[in-house]
Length: 341
Image 1 (cartoon, helix red, strand yellow):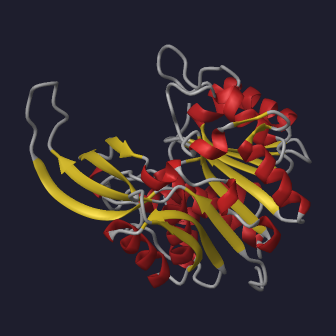
Image 2 (tube, rainbow, N blue to C red; image 1 turned 180 degrees about the vertical axis):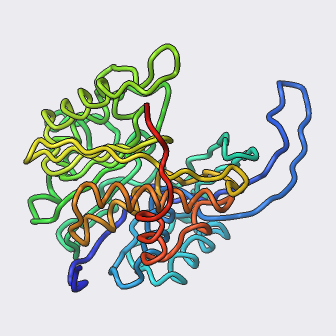
Image 3 (cartoon, rainbow, N blue to C red; image 1 turned 120 degrees about the vertical axis):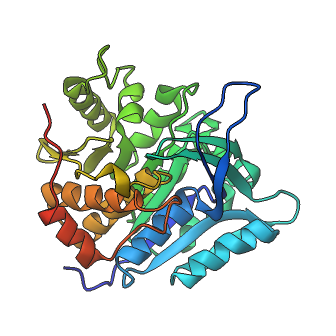
């Protein structure tokens, strides 16, 4: 295990999630009942950073992003600070409100988001002082949801790619995450960043969309061959160390240097234990960053990250379900996993 001398920066989207549990999703013009309302942090930075801090409070984590000078911004920053996360690199806008999502969550974990970008649309490379970044690993998300980073760059393809190159030139390893956007040009916005990413931690839909492939067959069955091909294409595009892909039923890793694929099925969670799945991808990402930090093998990484993501299902919001590293390690080794066909 690590001696905790390495530092992490987690940058990108910062949101407040207003989670509303509903009894059904209504058709247009119809009514459904809200059974519970709660406010929680959301977005890559709070979700990933707080879950990682709760998993292992000894890892030095700094949050980096832009919030509004408003109640929501102060709420998010206070939640980060209460979990021991350094918030010195979070800046405030006096003119733009903090981004937020209204999350409609059904029993069983399915959810729908109504999203306002807020300060996330104004956050850009100029807000990151690369020369004074004090970390060993820089994780940023989400590509496709950070307008200034997704902007075209004549030399590097996107502003995100230019930033990641500058970070790597400082001797800092880079990690990226992506948001699922049905209307985005995945190739144009994501491929340039892959060239300057050491790690890519994304889901199966995002992975396959980069290569214009389908993650699922017409009958709804997971298409492993397409996922493996898409991971190989990501490696060819420039990812330097590992590609980690998560989906509901399983997870994959591809070690770029050894060219070895690994797959580990998800934990089998009783339906009565599932309260929601908001932020499950970020929790998987936090588990993956934990594993990368501690130098776990790919199989150990997927076992741990999938168990961390399973914990997320135990709460309606994105951070209350997570457990400690000891509890997650126990779940990873002892809980039953899905049987894959």
